[in-house]
Length: 289
Ligand code: AMP
Ligand code: MN
Ligand code: MN
Ligand code: MN
Image (cartoon, rainbow, N blue to C red; front, side):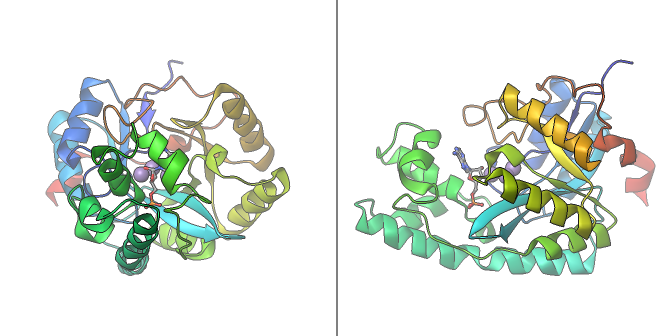
């Protein structure tokens, strides 16, 4: 059977993507995506616009979100929710609480960057923000490139914004349990985003997977814009071992900032069960209700 061109992780200007929600869907359509989820960070505000365009273009679509959590010893982990009801009150309240810490975090980041010689970063980052509640390190990165302190967004993270670098500040996000409960409570499927990105020992990674599964988490991203081939093989193996559904996820933010474009990942390894076997795309008739 031909593999489905599913892409279940990407961003719009509602979080730290470079394109408006409708434009993300247009690009997915052009690229031949056959099932799309928009998964903005800690925010569902772009879903209505994306859904409307998905129906206009006939792109099968599921509502998504990417929730920031703190796990273990100040590790930030991202949990994707797929097929959520974007009007679920607990989910909305939870995401609101997660977002509410971002502004003061941004001010603390700017204070640290100021000490390190990068001035005016808070105001600078805000110029790149589409949604004032969602200032992120990506917006700081764009300002730091613009102000000539780094050559591209990736180098900003390497030199300034990653954990241990001068502009990094600790921050407490949601708990793993809260994020999974919000997603499952809103009728969605919880998936660990880009497991290869976290700096965890193999023991810690197993602990994360075990806890996630016990809480009701069902999937992991095996194919991700941030995974190299050896990581794809490793997470394919772990999906089988843990009985996780497998996701295919570009994590596209925009042209020039993302290694992988919408719908341009390889096929999932055949032995895995794709996460989309348990997802129901939104249809036009549903939107008209
Ligand atoms: P925040 O939620 O404010 O901590 O910002 C995290 C975002 O920064 C991620 O969702 C990515 O879009 C971006 N990011 C994190 N690490 C890197 C990296 N090494 N290179 C490029 N972008 C990154
Ligand atoms: Mn991002
Ligand atoms: Mn992420
Ligand atoms: Mn993402």
